[in-house]
Image (cartoon, rainbow, N blue to C red; front, side):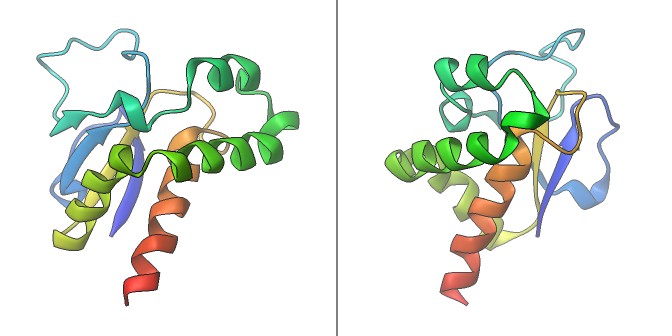
Length: 119
């Protein structure tokens, strides 16, 4: 099972393996206190795409298309997430305050599509 969760939320047993999936380190979080398996910067949107989007809901549909295209070109970046999801629960961590328009949601859908193809 794949989940998304803000880094500011408490870790729990249902999280499974936790991965930070954004390019920049979250504000106000000490590296030694964030419970996670790894920080996967390369699976996050490129700097150009991240800056273009700027969490503007009006750009959400286009952001999803562009980010999915980036993901499709870089399977090595997301393959560890897919492998972990096949073994158990995975939580994708993000820090954006917008819980409805962020890269972790797009990444979750992208990975779920690939998982369902193998079923």
